[in-house]
View 1: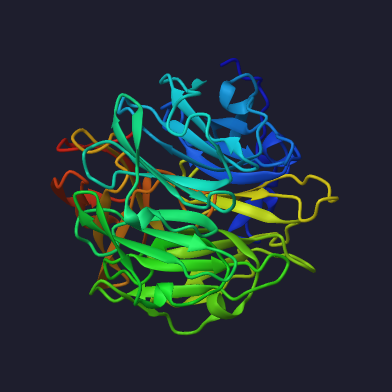
View 2: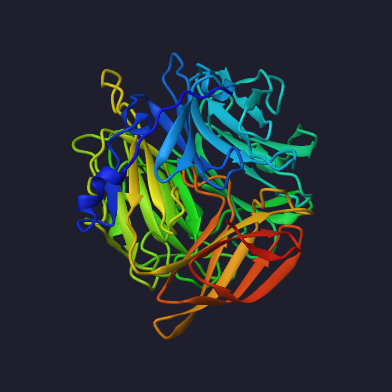
Length: 497
């Protein structure tokens, strides 16, 4: 890789810090280079402790993807000569994980228009090699997105791929080691629905990853409960699979801090707005529709979604990106009121309007302890110009935080599927929070693989519990806030410089 240096800085926006929680960066190629963007993946591809930015592009005739290396302090470097930026394919979703457990993140990028999907291996320094025969090989697909996840807990990440046209059956490939994958063909994989997003999560807290698939065009969504040893049960009598909207995006997150994953589902009627949905995990293997609020009544043509505690007050907030809609299009930011209910935040972002947005993702890009936001933009109509992407830097507040980056040994190296639970005293009350490491959020997005917790006014975490996919469990007490840590499976918790 021989990247071309292109820097930008958001420091010139300092006079506006008092106005909003975020400032919008308007200089630099990440936010000025036009394109028909799809996936946003905020991942550290070169192992320097800073999350980089990958953006897939989806024009019908093909378009090169973008990769920006994070140099710190809001500066990025555009990569122009690596194979992952020279595909000239109509790319769609993307997912990153360490497929061969060699300590770096590899990539899988889906394409549409019956083009082959793309598998890239990382040499450890952020240089990618296209593996033409890897995973799905030369098979032409109409794939929307993909998600890595170790569903059989053997220490190797597997991959699930959604399709929305052609042979609509979705694809599951099991990792057998050394970057070899075998296709799994079981009854539960025989559905032929127009699927958009796929998101792994251990929603029943039994130690293995379950799967939710969002299906569009007035179809029921699909929820598959992992029964262990590679067997899945299709759930058919739960509220999350009873409605027939046109679902595109879904995100898991524990919105009420009860230790169980809740589920947001975003819908889009293509040029026609639909209401979105929020389901609360009842802790008994099922879900209950959340009380009606703005999330369920704001409408929108929702394509991307991602949870994060952007104000560090100790609960998960939600960003929803909208596109392919009629009239003025705006994105949604929802603030958690502390009890799992949400209010529309119309103040924290300086600009909610968008020509058309696709994927979105959160990461603390400048390592100041506060989550920043990147949103991809797309052509709302065939004849519309190609827009530029959106970057919002979080200006922070007085709340404290904790960040932890995990590395598996017996578990997969990127720790996909690991759960972290922290207990802290917030406003005089003991509060447990939970995060699960995931290789996909919403539709065409991937949050940072570094777990982030807002702690409000807490100066320390009273208890930290890490549950690894291998079944190993580690516990720590009195962890200082305002720090980022590294933890290797069954190792010591160390400060990350």
